[in-house]
Length: 539
Image (cartoon, rainbow, N blue to C red; front, side, top):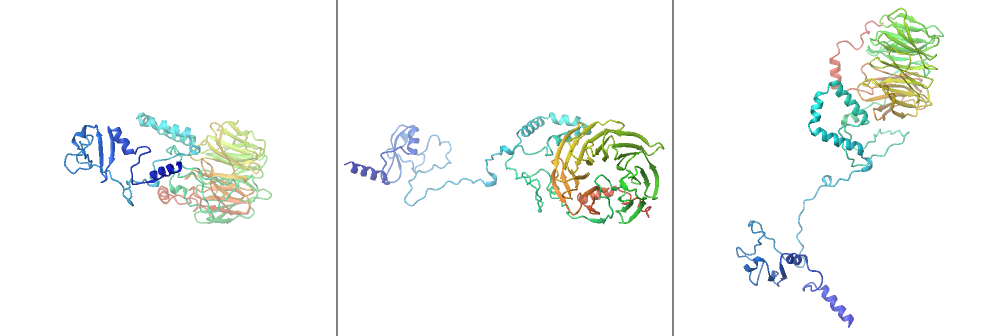
């Protein structure tokens, strides 16, 4: 009998046209009970009937009690009587083959979803908190009044401090990161397609990141008998657009305005030129010789003006500071020459123990930086005979020494084959701000005056020029073409062209810092003199 009882229960459970006697009550019955109705049932004609009504509106409904009554004033709920224009929904039974009408809900586009899950690993929590606090303080109105009281110099100081503290990131940046960072390329990887890896969208203008950098030189000059010596400085470009080149014992002037080449001097053997440097005005060229002498030449008249002695060994580097000419030699000494007076030797700086191969005055003329073969960089204040700072982080000779044109206390230095590192220094505090491994000997460094970038020339083993983005020191581009190590880099007067001299006896010109046409028109409009002021006098 048990199997017959089971079969009856099964038939009763699967029957769809009868009333369910077991199981939990449907949702509409539970709602009715909560509102005070004792029992509800559905009649054969599909209408909902009420029995045992205890609600206040039960007196208006007879025993038929239909919710769907066409007579006016009936079937209204006391809670909905205040809105007579609102339609009362009908409760109906779904017939066979009939689908329940779907409720249309507005779909949210994929790009406008309301759930954003930030990536904690790529979000700088401390910087985000600082930005939030700064934004709240600024919204209070106190920040605006403080900014009005600041001077132009104080505002510039705050902008520089913000840039250095934010490590080059723009101050107005999203505080949350919703994307994972792109994978970093290998350290020695060279991408022929020049794909720059980034972490999503950057705040800089798109034109700045898509600037075209030609990978071939604009012009190539032959330089036979160019001395292949890492410690020498055989190239310099004047403000009058004259490029001075030393080929062994001969000096030539290349006029970039008309392309003419003029021989300036010819030394007697075995003497040869070790260093060249133009005065700021561009009419006098200083030469350091292997005999220890320093000569001053008037290029316009092609005449030797003065010869200054003092060094016992070759003069490998020169640097002008107004009328003061500083010279470094193989002995490790640095001399200051006042070219206005007869007794030109006014000071001697003694700190290096080996050959001085890098020497450069800061743009404001207050500080002198010197690098030598003893792996040290010294910072000298004007008029002092003892160094202000001594940097010993490099592991090889430091020939590449360059000051930032827009920040007077920022210095870039590069080491030789055993070091292969570029370091950025704050010469006010003596702290190393950044260091980057280049995997090549660093022979020269130049800063751009139009972009926040610097370029480095390299020897063994890649023989290339490399553009770097400041302050992140990310590699922007590699300029290849030299078959020998790059010995020297020089910048054109307009700051757009970089010239490189290499051991393959060629001089190549790269237009890596081109300026927009609008900026170029403004610059040319302020010039009232020709490209070369000495073009008429050089024969």
